[in-house]
Image 1 (tube, rainbow over the protein chains, first blue to last red):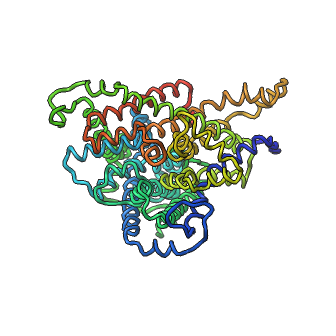
Image 2 (cartoon, rainbow over the protein chains, first blue to last red):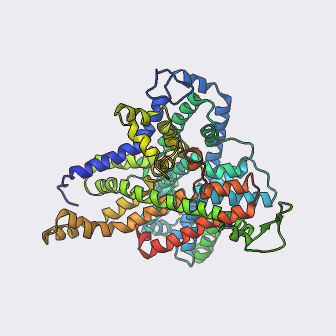
Image 3 (cartoon, one colour):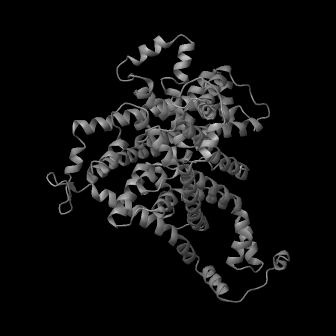
Amino acid sequence: MRSDAPRAPWGLKLAAGAGLVFMIAPLLLIFVYAFTTEERTYQWPPPGFTLQWFGVTWGRTDVWQALTLSVQVATISTAIALVLGTLCAAAVSGSKFFGREVISLLVILPIALPGIITGIALRSAFGMTDIPFSFWTIVVGHATFCVVTVYNNAVARFRRTSGSLIEASMDLGADQFQTFRYVILPNIGTALLAGGMLAFALSFDEVIVTTFTAGQQQTLPLWMLEELVRPRQRPVTNVVAVVVVLVTTIPILLAFYLTRDGDQIAGSGK
Amino acid sequence: MSAASSAFLEHRRGPLTGLSDLFWRRPKLLVFLLLVPPLLWLGVIYVGSLVALLMQSFYAIDEFSGMVDYDVLTLKTYGELFRPANLDIIIRTVLMAMAVTLASAVIAFPIAYMAARYVRGRWKAMFYLAVMLPLWSSYLVKIYAWKLILAKEGILNWIFAQLHLTGALEAYLGLPVVGGGSLSISYTGTFLVFVYVWMPYMILPTQAALERVPVNLTDASSDLGGTPWQTFRHVIFPLALPGIIAGSIFTFSLTLGDYIIPQIVGSSRLFIGQAVYAHQGTAGNIPLAAAFSVVPIVIMGLYLWMAQRKGAFDAL
C-alpha cells in the first residue's frame, strides 16, 4: 500500500469515465422513458412527462401474474441452491479428496456453458422422460445454475473461517451438529445471505433457459421478451423495465454490503 | 439458550450424538453424505441431460418422414454443419465473438486500470458498484435500453441530427457488412448491444490481475529509465494479460451462445444460438440442433485450453 496515490493521467481518466458513462447511461435512459407521454414510438426527446403509466401497469393482471410467478420460482430455486451450494462448499473445503476439481467444474458448468445449451438439454431430457412442462420444470432449470453463486460465496467464507474455531468448539464438548449450529452457521451466515440474494437476482432475470423449460407459464422475463420481439404496449413495458431494474438492484446492493469486508465474490461470473 | 451462553454446551445423549461420533471417526463418510444431494442434482439431472442431448446429435432425421431415426448411429448430422449455409453461420458467430471480445478489452481496460491503481477508499466502492450494477442488472432490460437508443426516432439519431452529422451516419450505414437499412437492423447494432451486455464481465478479472502487479516492479522500471509508456508496454500489460484472457472467456463464450440479442437487434442473418433455437423448435430437427450446440462447446473447449496455457485460470 502506497500512501500517496499518484494522479491519473487525464487520458486515462477520460477513457475510464467514457467507459462508465457507456455502461450506466443506457440504464438511466430507461427511467426517463417510463415517464414519457408518447405511446406508439420510442421518440426522443419525450414530448411530455406523465405518471399515468405506473397506474396503468399497476392495474394489469398479466404483469402481476408474471411477477408473482417469477418471485415464486426465484424463491424456491434460491432455497434449493442454498442447500445444494452449502453442502458442496462444506464438502469441498472440509477436506481434500480426489475429484475436488471435478466438483468445482460441475458447479460452474451450468453458467459456463451457453444458456441455450443448458436449456435445450433440459428440454430434450424432459421430453424424453415425458415430464410435462410446469412450474417445477422452470425451478429445476433455475436451481441448477443458481447453485454456483451460493457455492462461490460459501467456499470463500469457509476458506476465511479458521479451522481452530471448529476444533475449539469440539474441544469444549460440542458434537458436530452443535458445532454447525453455533459456530459454522453464524460464521458463514452473511455469505449465504449474499449468495442467496445473488441467486435470487439471477433467477428473477433468467430468460434463456426459461424459454426452454416453461410450458404455458410466463415469467416476467418471458413477458418482457415477448414485448421486445413484438412491441404492443410500450408504455407498460417501460414501467416494467424500471421495476425490474429496481428489483435486481436492491439485492445486489445488499449483497455488496454483506460481503464488502474482503471477499469480492459477487461478480465472479453470472 | 442458557447452555450456549455458558460456553459449555450440555452434553447430549442420543442418536444425533452417535451419528456425530461416527462422522468424527469417518470424516470421508461425512464428505460423501454432504456430496450426495448436489451430485444427484448436478451430476444426474444436469450432466445426464447434457449427455442425452449430445447423444441426439449422433442420430439423423429421416428425410421422408421427418422423424428421428433412433436405430442407426451416424455422423451425417455433423456433416450437415459443413454445408456452406451452416458454415456461414458458424464463421459469422465466431467473428462477431472475436470483435466483441476485442472491443470489450479495449473499453474495459481503462476502467479496470483506474479502479486498480488510482481510485481509493470511497471512490473505489463507487467504482465497484458502477461496474457491478450494470453487470447484474437485467439482461432483457439492457437489450431493451438499446432498442430505445437505436430506434429511428431514438436518442442516437437525435444526437447525430443535433450535431448535423446525420449525413455521416447515413454514409456509414451505406458501407457493406457493417451497414444496413438502419442501426437497429445492422451488424453494427448487434455488435454494440453485444459489447454493452457482455463488456462488464471483462472488467473484474482485468482489475484483479492489475491489482496483483507489484508496485516495486513498476518503480524498478522507472528507476531504470523506462518511460511510462515503456513501463506499461513491457511490465504492466504482460502481467495483466492473463486477467484479460480470463475476462475474454466470458465475453467470447456468452456472445457465442446468445440467440436473443441478434434476434431483437440485427439483420435477419442467423447466429449459432438462433440456428439451434430454430432447428429444435419450428424445424423439429433435434439432431441438427444438438450438433449445432456442440459447436460452441468445442470452440470453448479449445479456447479454455489455450487460456489455461496462458495462465488465465489463476486470474479468475
